[in-house]
Image (cartoon, rainbow, N blue to C red; front, side, top):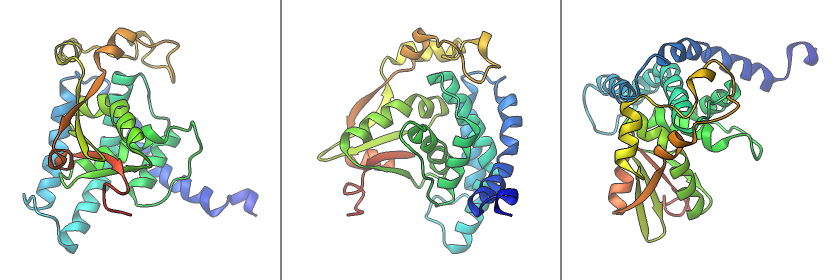
Length: 245
């Protein structure tokens, strides 16, 4: 019987996959957006979140938190589709469907077991973006300062195109993620350039990436105060820096 209906884990994955069905439809629509439109879409999501909280920027009470959870789940297919398209354009990486499931599992506060090389860093960017829309801060906890810096810079182009601030908290020093060459990045945005070449836009994975555009979307660390890093929509750090030890 287990071979026919699958394990409990298999059934749960199928259920979650069903919640993600609308992502493909939104993704097709977002393919037509200009690079400049991504930030505007993010702002529209943020407005929906604020309206759920009656325009308040304060931490929600229990009833408001439930409304916020429900609204984020409604926004999720659109937000995941937008982040997926942003990753495709800035990194030449399009999260696979199974990675979307991993992102949804994390958003739900559950554990997603992933092996080395299965894309944990990219997966985490999806729920980080979604929860960063609240303005209350979405934190990525990793094992050391180097990984916090590396992963924030690696995923930084996605967040920057989406209009999301990213902070990094290391021991005795903090950073914000910024474009390495702002003028070059702005030019790539204005010209609607993409790391994923247009001639391969309908492929699951392109045989090549536009390395010039990849370089244009490169990010860097800019030293800032700890408070500024904490105030970012998304912040990367270690457990002891976030006070979990």
